[in-house]
Amino acid sequence: MLKAITLAENKGFILSNLFALLIIGLTRFLEPESGILIFSEFVIVPFAMGVISIWCWRKLELKSKTLAAYSCVNVFIAAAMSAIFLREGFICLIIVSPLLMVFTMMGAFAGRAMFKKNNQTLNVSVFVMLFGIFIFDSLSVHHFENKVADTITINAPPAEVWKYVVAYKRIETPGKYWLFRIGMPSPVQSTAEGYYLGAKRKCIFSNGYVFDEKIVTYNENKDLTFDITNQPRDPEIMGHIDILRGQFLLKDNGNGTTTLTGNSWYRLYVFPVWYYDIWAESVTRNVHLRVMEHIKELSEAK
Image (cartoon, rainbow, N blue to C red; front, top):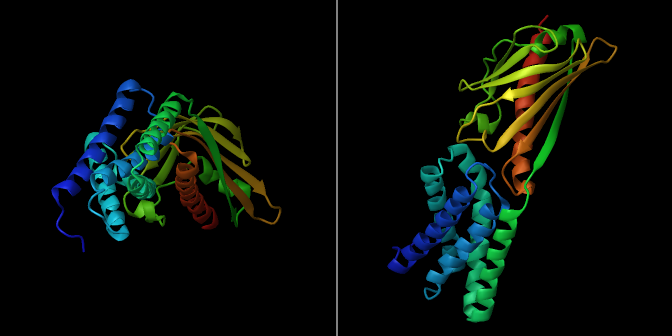
């Protein structure tokens, strides 16, 4: 169990989080319209938080387990402040917390090693390096797009599958994906004003959010491609990712079955990509599979 927290320990929590709030607030002030969350905000800032907190705790001789636990508390405070001041949603905070946890702990343990050496030149050099990385990252261009593809086999001919590709009735079953189960919106229905090129289409999600779409390729029984013309913004996933285009490809297997491929193109506004794209691919894939499994069920019902 953690012992009663002293004034020095409170100082470590307070100063490190005030530093993070100041830096993040400054980036929002300088670029209020960009909407991009850069690598440094999730790596350099939490690392610096760990160093700052351990500077406040340097005389306490904290054991490694206690230091790790305190780093977790620090991240919890940072998450609470993000929810209050940056209006980040519950799902977003779940996704970002492991990244913050790792780099806050790394900063704390690195800081402990630094301050044990008591080398002022080294300490100043580390902070200068962190500051330099942050400035360079802030001034760099950030752009990332990706495509996710998923395939299933349906025991029905393409003509039957096509009926439910363009539009499908409401999905009544709950989502299987764990993020859907804890509150992330999931697709429940698609509607279309017509079966033709240029027709408007809507993808409706469980919380009432609607993605407005336009059919840009209509090759009956083979290819339905649609651009996203308008999408919702909320404190959760949307706002950090834009879905650009969706596509369903149907392949006649010649034996009464159809291979259905779902493709989605998206743009990320959160970095580092090596971390957030794992989540983006997972969410996109599970949106695909929820819709495609529903199409499969409807197509095979007859």
